[in-house]
Amino acid sequence: MNKIAVVGAGISGLSIASYLEKHQLDYHIYERRKKDDLTGHGFLLPKEGIEYLSQIVDQSLLYKQGNFLKKYIRYSHQGKILAEKELHDVFVISRSSLIDILARNIPAEKITYEETVIPCTLQKGKLKKHDGTYLDSDLAIVSDGSKSRIRRETFQDEVMRTVQEYEIVNIIKCKEIAACLEDNFMKYHHEDGGLTFGILKLSEDTVLWYAQFDHEKYKISEASTVENLKSYMFEIFNDWDPMVSSIVKGSNYENVHLWRVYELEKLNPFFNDNIVFIGDAAHPLIPFTSQGVTSALKDSFTLTQCLITEENRVDAFRKYEAERKPEIEIHIRNGRTLLNEFLKPLHQQTENILPISYK
Ligand SMILES: Cc1cc2nc3c(=O)[nH]c(=O)nc-3n(C[C@H](O)[C@H](O)[C@H](O)COP(=O)(O)OP(=O)(O)OC[C@H]3O[C@@H](n4cnc5c(N)ncnc54)[C@H](O)[C@@H]3O)c2cc1C
Image 1: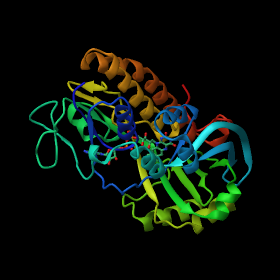
Image 2 (image 1 turned 30 degrees about the vertical axis):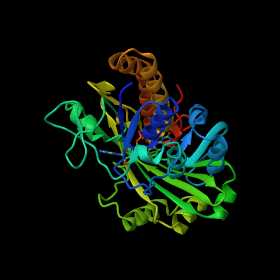
Image 3 (image 1 turned 90 degrees about the horizontal axis):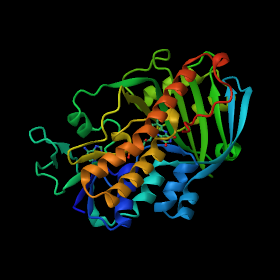
């Protein structure tokens, strides 16, 4: 096998590098951010995600850094319990912890931080470093996220659009709230639809909360400064159940972030020439599915298997796409169903729906 360049050290880039390392394949990762810049929030992972992660990371370390959720409780925005569901093997972990655990698999000399890789407009299939030199590789695995610049340059007719749902996410330190959440995943829903507030315990002293909102109905200013997000949250959630309004008012906002959610109108091929796409770069999935990370892990596993077993690159890429695309299409459909449910008034929504897409 020839030399492989991996672009992006998010979940998909680090997980495929872990598999390449395991199989002693020659690779190098290029990552735009600084090594210690581990921003981001948290992920819900279904059982399958844990199983794939367990192939490449130390399970006891993983379990120490996250939390298994036992019960999903669905509330109205005034605090009335609408439904409850036992959860089996649903795990929550912060993005920074997961990136940190995955990065431990990669020898320091095989990863370059603060290196933005860009497509070469003049020579198709070639990728450049910021100093203008070409990447030293025979094939490139591109894992640079949902707004992948390399994918947009490769498939110039793709249509990317915003989803009618944005999210404001925050991570706060608070032992008291973490203790009172126990291992429950609590989610509050406005009766008119299009507005929810979810709370999860990441660890004994850390809590993740998020608001999902229909941005056509609950308009937000374009400037997503901390002050703007804070006053938006205060205004929108002021009269909700005290559990929600007190968290919103009592939170520290230094980690708050607004996620604008995007999707592709139609999936592109997962490869072109000597470039293959994995994770969000191949297929942005809306957060409602809770399948972004698991899908990235499965892409990494499948592509590595195909690279090992197939005789040539094209067969490997074809087999990878044939195995992964049908499942991704199911998650895209499920994501749209979950989005439509979310936009409806509460009394029209399916009662016991879990905010996760299953195949
Ligand atoms: C609000 C929100 C909530 C979510 N909740 C969940 C959830 O509960 N469960 C779940 O499974 N998924 C969830 N997801 C989806 C999940 O975050 C993604 O599917 C997952 O992070 C994809 O990982 P990735 O490695 O493909 O992309 P990313 O995590 O985006 O990583 C891309 C990496 O590439 C780097 N990069 C970008 N451009 C370049 C370049 N030109 N050169 C070099 N490096 C570059 C970036 O710095 C980054 O490190 C959520 C997403 C959002 C927005």
